[in-house]
Length: 290
Image (cartoon, rainbow, N blue to C red; front, top):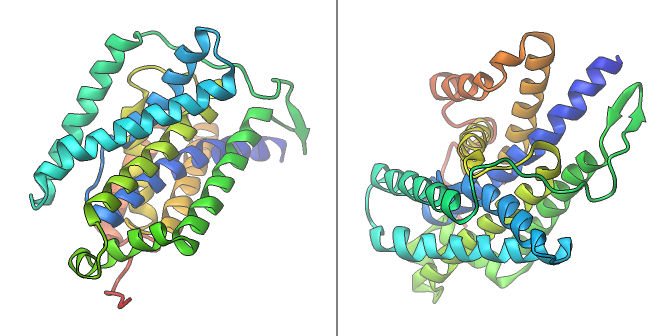
């Protein structure tokens, strides 16, 4: 039982990170129909920028906030310089653009920072908390709590604010949104900034556990994409459920089968979804009238 709980806690921790990356995919996809494969780079920027800003003596909370702002600026630049000029292009072209942006950001990070692994100190110590015979790191609780708070804040923003409703209107019908006076270009740019902030927060929360480096975003983007596909591309609830399930599958697969197959599980999930369940668990099967 203790072993089962240990794998479950580990799976939920990494699953929360996948869920946040998938949520970033979902935000941008809903607002612009773009599948942003540079989403994992926002996670890398959050972790790496915090490490290097804190290294010059800036308090960790201020360094973390600065890293989030940096990631949001990068997200806005990605929209303005790469996505907006290609507006109207087909989906394949937009995917290629985001993959190119991912490669560019990764290369830039290797020059601006370095190619070494880095970490951050745990926010509240590293003494494990025992529960049912399993040990939980305090930082894992930060990751889970942080993911929960982000989901609640995002829900409140989307359902209770004018800007959030403008994003929903743009996602439902961009032309109709423009006709009622919504600046859809601004709204899409806002969705890029928000998804960048979410990715950066995920990177900051998980860096004390998993380390960070200039190229960690690639694998995170693929696993976040798998989570978004599994939950149903475009569904925020699906992104969260998909991320947590993939994290649990990885943890139990690594624990009970072999850790060598851990990274293959996300790709098996992608293939399974594409072949047998293209809309995912919570994907929309019909057009909604709003």
